[in-house]
Length: 102
Image (cartoon, rainbow, N blue to C red; front, side, top):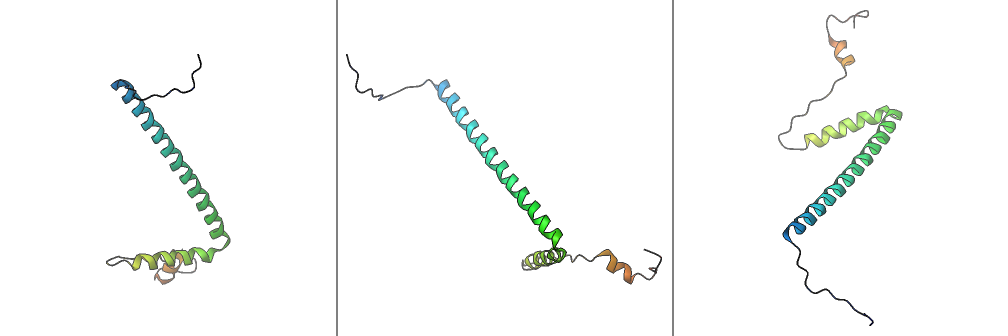
């Protein structure tokens, strides 16, 4: 006897088996989602590290980046922008600040 073709037309699985398969598929989707999310976090951290290195090499770039962020924030209607001022600049205008007082 020779079998040349086997075809499955209708398979009926018990409800508990269907639930178990659904839980397994959901767990696999969750696992893949966590892996993708962690890879994204790793890439973002690497990019932030690269950006920090560039900003460290070019200090003026940080000021330009800050000003650019403030321009973007100010473009939104009803937004309030807090302009950062270096403490050294504020100390220059204090009346009690002298050459030997910080």
